Image 1: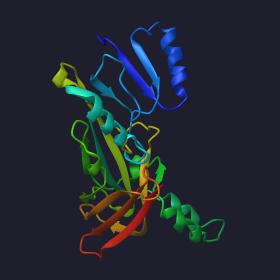
Image 2 (image 1 turned 60 degrees about the vertical axis):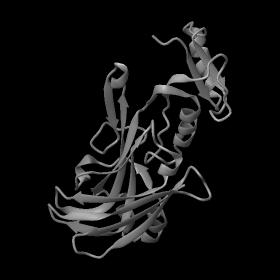
Image 3 (image 1 turned 30 degrees about the vertical axis):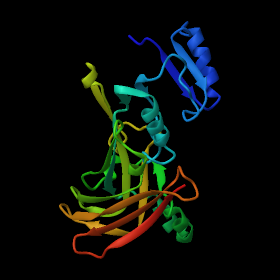
Image 4 (image 1 turned 45 degrees about the horizontal axis):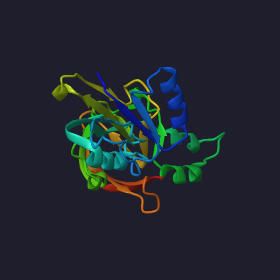
Length: 259
């Protein structure tokens, strides 16, 4: 049974949370603080907490995420042997024939492709139909919440995708898995997914539209790297560089922005 809980939020939503706590007569066990985590001091005599629970994930897992803030709170407040929930998150990649930008190829008989090109440079957040997925999935990175560091949040990861269905590869699709594991504390484990084949969430999927479609036969292999680095002008935004090659074909590199 939880002895006490501390809630922290820098926005005015904390006032509605206070009303809910009071309405359920839990004010003696739940303390709420209108503050950023960086500015928070635990109420005396508390020095450490046993659990940290945070919904920090952003689009494409890392865009506008609060993971750096969670890392700060973990290092400052979590007691030895404590747990963080979610306990781990994995960023994954699949190849798809999905191409929303095809709309601009023929707009009442006119080509509007010049409008599509600036849009292509931006990573798109949208629902990708599961029947457009052409490949298996590759895990780009898994972040364990007890050990992840701020330096881990900028990285380059290799990937290899194998087509299970023939078709034109028109986009790379990012999604993530979120794990909750309390087995070390006598609890259970569970996972939810944001993949195209999973129930939709507000995170949807993050789509990187390729400028040149790649025809794939079933069994064809696509290899490359994906680099994610924080944007110099907006620290919660990301620049994405995708380098890929299908079979013995040419190597292509594209840059995308999430800002």
